[in-house]
Each structure stands twice: as structure tokens, then as C-alpha cells.
Length: 88
Image 1 (spheres, one colour):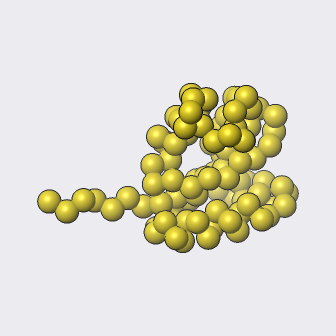
Image 2: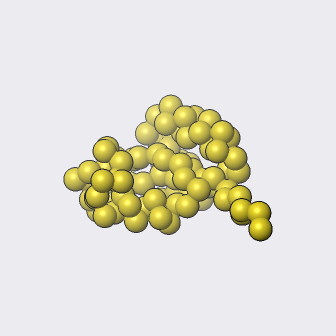
């Protein structure tokens, strides 16, 4: 049986200190759980910044396209990121 291809997504998390974190994953729910658990698979930036809230998620498709979109979002100023969140 062929393995199912998972769609890659980009996401934004709002941290307890108000900062925004951008990431990408092919299983956003699992990745958010890893961040929330604050364990070894949590992104270093997010450690100690709980509570974490998923505020934006967008399916992109391939991993390379998701990486490009993640880089684009990371390069935006905070206000542009907040606008992106409010438009969803």
C-alpha cells in the first residue's frame, strides 16, 4: 500500500508574553501538543512562554513551499503578522 502524503502547513502561535512564533509541520495538532508539553521536542523559542495559543494555520502543500511561506511570514513585521491573523 502506498504511504499517504501529508500536506504541509504553516502556523502562528501567540505566546503568553504576546510574542508570535511561526512554524511549519505536516501534523499541526501533534506539533502544537509538543510545544504545549514544553518537552524536548518543543521549539527552544517557546520554552517558558506558556500559555501558547494557535492563532493562524494555513495548508500549503509540499514541504518546500511551506518552508518558503514560513520564511516569508517570519520576515514580516509584527503588525503584518497580526493582520494575517485577523484576516482568517
